[in-house]
Structure formats: C-alpha cells, structure tokens
Image (tube, rainbow, N blue to C red; front, side):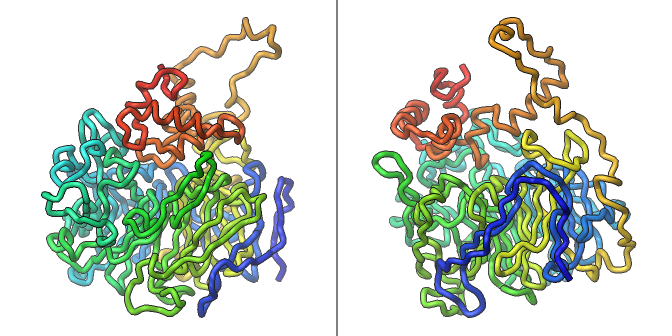
Length: 624
C-alpha cells in the first residue's frame, strides 16, 4: 500500500536520508543524526499532509486547542470533542482527564469527563500557598489500593524561609518581586518552588514532595544543609546556582511521569535537568534523605560535575560544555511492552545550548547505561557514563557538542526551520517503535520511524482568534499552537465500543467562528514618506488594546517578556545576546552587549530582573 500525500503547494525541503553515527552502538539501537523532511514553512495548508499507511501506527490522535479537546483518525477526520482543552489524556477507566483552565502554565485543578463530555470528577487546589501547573498523571496507588492523581504544584517560599536555609541574600526573593502563575504566589518577597502533590479521589492530599527540602549550599557552614563541595551531593540541588536567583518561578517544572514498576516519579525543569525521585515514601520521609534525587540528567555543571556553556574571549560562542537539554518538556518513561521500555523519552526544545540556529530534538535516554555500553542494575550518574564529541558542518552554525553516552536514540532535523518549538511540545513512543511528536508553537504533529523517516504529518487548523483555518500564514505567531498530542489504538478502554464514525474534516464540521481576520492583523501603513506625517493609527478601543496586548505577547512586543524566553522572571546574558542578534539581523557586537548587560544588572547577580529592566535608561533595555 502506498503512502498518501495531499497535493499541496508549500515551500518544503525534502532531504535525502543520510545517517551519521555520533555515538557508540548499543544492543538495540544506535544514536543517529538524521537529515529528515519536516514542516519547513509555517505557511501552507492545515490538517493531514502525509500518511504512510504501511508504516504509521494506526489509531486515533487526541489533542487540545484553545479550550476544547479533539479526537481525529489517521485521515484527520473529526471523531469527537470535549468542552475542555489544555493537556487532555485518556484514562484506563475510559474517561478523559484534563486541567480546568485553558492554560498549561496555571490552573486551579482538574476535571474528569466521560465520552459525552459530562463531568464525573472534579478536584480544585484551594490551599493558598499552592498553584497547580503544567502536568499531572492518574496512577493506581498500591498502598491505598485506589486511584490517585499526581500533579506539579508551585509552593510559596518567603524571603525569610530562603535566607534561613542559606540562600545567598543577593539571590533570595526580592521585596516586591513577582512571579507568574497569575501572580498568585510570588509577590512581595516570595518565590515559588515546585512540589509534587498526590490527592485521592476525595480530594485529600495523601503525599507530597518538594524541591525546597532537597537543597544544599556551600556558603554558610552554620546551616545544616552546608556542604563543602557541591559535586559531592548529586542527590540534592544547589540553591545558589550561578546566574539564577531563587526568585519568581524558580525552577519552572513543566512535565512529570510515574513509573508503576519502580514506584518512582520523574520531574523536568525547564532550566536544563530532569530528576527521578522515590514515591515509595511517606510525606515525612520524602522531606529527608529518602526523598533525594535517585537520578538526574541534563546539566552536570549544576552539581559541579561538568562544564558550563562558555563564550570565547571575543564573545563568540565557544562551547556548549556538558549540557544536554535546554527548555525541555514532556519527560516520560517508555511504558512496559513498548520498544525501549524503561528508557526515558523527552522533548528537548533546544534552548540555551549555544546554537546559533537553535532547534529541537527528541532524546531517548538509558539511565542505566555505563561508559562501556553495558547495563547497570542501578542508575548511573551521567558524567560517569562519559560523552562522545559531535562536530557539525560549518554551514550548520553549531559548536561541537559533548553528547552523553546514555543517549541511545535521537530525532532532529538539519535546521531549526525544520523542527523547533521554543516552548511546550511533547512526544510518545508507539507500539510499533515509531515516535509521535508534537511541536507546540506550530501546531505540528508528526510520526517518525526508528530510522527517523516521516510516516504521518498533520497541522492543527484550530486557532483562538481566527477560527478554523484551511491555510495557516506566517503572519500569525503561535495561532494554532497545541501543547501536546497523544495516539491511542482503537482497543483503548476510552475508545472500545464507542462510536468512532468519521464526521468530516475539522475545517468542514467544527463551527468555530473567527474573532479576527488574519488579513487585518497589521495596521495599515502610509504609502509614502509624504503620507507619513498625516498618517493616523486607528483609535484604540478596548478590543484593539486587547488585540495589541495579545500580539505583543505572541510576537514579542513586551521587551522583557520577549527576552525572558524561558519564563523564569529573569534575563540571562545569553538571552540578551539572542535578542540583540534578532534586532540586528543576526549580527552581534558581543562586547557592547556585555557592557549593556552589566549596566542593567545593577545588583551583579548575573541576571536581569524585571525591576532592573524597568529602571534602566532608555537605550539600555528599559521603557522609560
């Protein structure tokens, strides 16, 4: 049976499948660099673009778009929808579980819906010092012999609490500082430190673990968490990390998973690491040594067992150090029974890896792999497993990288135009060994084989402001974004026995009227210089003000938000360099940028806060 491809007119680049080994072969698979075809332009038709019926895993794809959840078949035919939509997933009981608000970064709680959209269970976090966000998972708690729900929650930490455990005063929550999550937690000398919370079906908290209980420092020997060498404590987190104070949304954890065979939880921080902790503890035990990290992967420099990314003396990019992931999302174990079972799978967004053309990757990681390629009975500290040096063609504008020997498979494209999502996104290992990928910012879902060949591709047609579009244009930033997608076989409990008759394409059957006309999203401009003096912009109504605000957030009109690309309420030197390079068409005067950074960074903590940006004179980054 031949592949099915729409007859489409778009600018796409189809490259030959060329493999270049970049690591030692392991028993089951090799780590390969692939030049693969992908969605090379944001402008073009939506919905199904490609389907290889012989090689794709047949099933139904679930995704959310702007407040509603949609189920489609392999042809992109609409099957069902639900009146909730942030990060939905089907449960083994046949229902759908999702967050209550259309915002993965902040929501009040969760709802469980049946096939017809009826709410059958609701949980709302009402504690004033907690704020659920990003990710959650329904598990079966063997101790309770009942289902429970695990979720990430931001927990309020005051400046006094931070100072009491040894946080450097220059890095502690600042008075009047404000984090995100809707400003619910981190105002007036407070910050937010992430926790994992578990609740039963009655809404009672039955277990909790928090990063705040697993911090070390090497500044104050009078504190109980003092350690002379940070490298001696890989099971704990350095609270005084260089360049990043304990402010606002400090760790910005964005994904988690649970392994029922191991009774362990994995949690990922956008700062460049994911961590594995023991769930087989009491809440009290979780605060102590039994709650320390069992494994961590991503940036060994954070515990002083690797090199940080560095800049050359002339301020050009020098080395990516030993950092492996940046801004990553959707950490997960590959489920039992699937190819690669027991390995980790993660969407590596590819932020802050010192690449001139940042791009995303999918990483499969074997946490038990030793330097010689053999397997250990317990987790192996990644630096002990070693690295392989990977160089790139000069035209790719990438510095050589040290790739961990624990990487056993990756997917990536030749350029960031082929595959890059600066936020959100996810991945899923399928029963036939393929991997389903969701590139958030483009609303781009696609499936690749273990050899990294494309076998299915779909573009989300649903936008918030412009309705359902048959064609998406470059002028609409993130209009059709989708946080994640999931593929389910027809035999899944949520689908078995249900009416799965296709109802037509979403663009034909979903009634979602446009709130805006994409063609009108740019203010008219004067036809000539002579016209400019008499040109008057449209009067700012409440609606146009809201539209302007939305466009600023999407396209980067708010300068601090634009530079703060990882949403941690501070701007690093690397983020400032990226902004300056964007302003100047790729050019960068690194010396001038460094002087500018130092002038704005008045408290000399290696990061620019919003308060410092606001106080900066015009021309130094401020708006005054």
